Amino acid sequence: MGIGCWRKPLLLLIALVLSAKLGHLQRWKGFQEQPMSKKNMNSTLSFFIQSYNNASNDTYSYRVQKLIRSQMQLTTGVEYIVTVKIGRTKCKRNDTSSASCPLQSRKLRKSLICESLIYTVPWINYFQLWNNSCLEAEHVGGDLG
Image 1 (cartoon, rainbow, N blue to C red):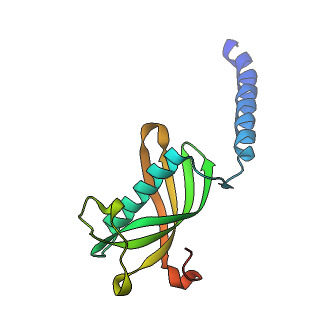
Image 2 (image 1 turned 180 degrees about the vertical axis):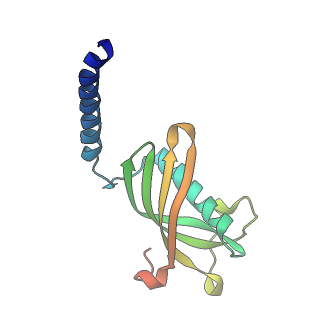
């Protein structure tokens, strides 16, 4: 009899906690247009370009030329959708100084516009590239700057 009398209040308490949690989750607004902080932007974009270069079959490394757009959403960490313009550099992929490499000119010049979904937990320096799609800059409205 002692256990039975606690069952209804316990179920009610669980229902209240769950509805409060679900109500909180529904208030999350999804991705919002918001500039990244300088610290998060630098580390997130560095992670992105390193991931891109590691996966690329190109002989040369790329570097970020311009952050075009950033959106963020808070989840268990921070999710960013970033749109960046990247350019092919004069450095080979295995060169460690690719961040400061000059961009290619003339016939080897190549620019891409990439949109990526990056999950990060900045307070433990954790990054994961969840999705990435790149097109040549000429196919998305020409050179953006």
